[in-house]
Image 1 (tube, helix red, strand yellow):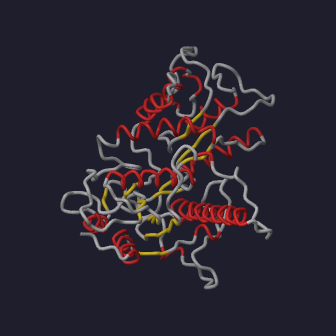
Image 2 (cartoon, one colour; image 1 turned 30 degrees about the horizontal axis):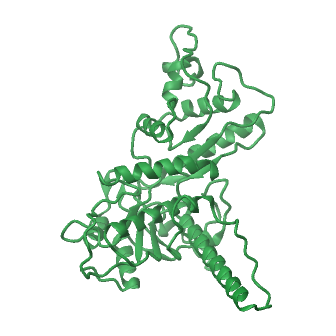
Image 3 (cartoon, one colour; image 1 turned 120 degrees about the vertical axis):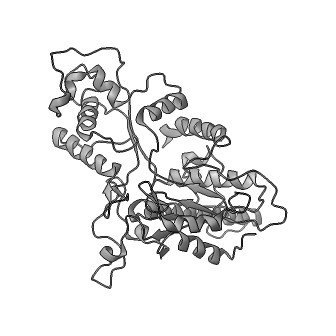
Length: 400
């Protein structure tokens, strides 16, 4: 993750500037005006909402979402608790994303696959209608590619798979031939690992995780080696949840809520991203609390001169991104699964009653190991309205 820190730092600065000007998706602070609480109840918890399959299906809002937000938003149009929308969807055009990335990283030459295809027209040969009508030479006006960042599933999979493989096997020099000698693989970063996602159709649709499966298998079939990722971002990565918590704390500060946010609730429809990610972050928070307690015991023993055996404490195990953002104030992240999206209780209930809802087929990404405990939600509810009601009951929170 260390290689991502400059990107992460720049993204954070950009979010802090933009978030005050507009409402948006992941990490937005929409609905907050920074007014004083005036004695109203201050929440000690924050909500992390997935979008597809929880609030909408395609372009159609899920009816329960309206009911949920009637509870969450007061008469002044403010959220009554901190809220962040944590989605793996890109929510913008590819060229727009490339332009944003160029601005964030300060890199002048961020190009899309379409730009590469236009510069090297002979590389995209699957669709006969898109082949050059007459022989053409590469338009050598682009620099050597030095890294590849994958944000979401493309429209033309065959074009993207072909050109990404070409980039990796030519070491970024698309005017050259594939190189058989062993060279360090170019940095490859990917986000949005959802194998499937829920739109208007009755069954889930292919997500970017499916595209990554194709890329990984084609690369291995050609080279005999596993493609390596420099980093995997988005859910279920812990980094995503840490950044979301950072945004929740910022919202609490803007509202002058002085109580620390100690509990996170992650509401999602996908066992392998939403539930896995929330539970993975919860493990991190539990481990961090254990380390803090061990340090406190060691410090007390040192102060009192005790000779008792002290717990072993490793000061170097903190994640690199903890130094970039304030350490988390949360001590737990609770997962809530809704039945309005990818998860379908009518088809996934196992016949063996000794099993719960743990899947025998792992739909998560290759580089995330299957752990039954990580795909077991804290609660299963029908929809997002039930999820909000459950959370408020558990927190004994009554909005004013």
